[in-house]
Image (cartoon, rainbow, N blue to C red; front, side, top):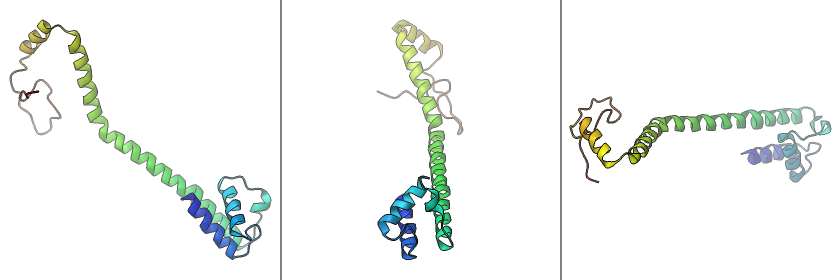
Amino acid sequence: LVFICVVAFASALCALNSHGFETLEDGIVNMGRIALSLASEEDLAKEGWQLMFLSLFVIVVHVGLLSVLIAQVVKGYAMLYEDQEGNSLKSKAMQCVEVESFLSIASRTRYFEEFSFSVPVPFDSGDVGPPGGFQRLEHA
């Protein structure tokens, strides 16, 4: 996107026969310097249309591309937020499995019977998952 802006503005200034933009190659090099803030004062000492084009170029490149960057960051955080609940449940399930692996078979059986995991638990429409048990047992 930056390259397209550089070529477009360089060709416009080349068409105006501006100083420092006599050929398209010189224009691309000078616009690249301006985009990277490496231009000298002589490159920026322009008049009339040249100054307007350079000002518009700086606004498009710096402000426009900054907006694109901000939009990408916002989209990334939105995707993370959507996956937050699923990742949280996955993390909790992994912790339960890790703790259960340290228990003996006798302890597991005792907890299974003590908390009545074999009895189905009714769910409401707003429930995310099984808060206190399993709705039904599935075959592995």
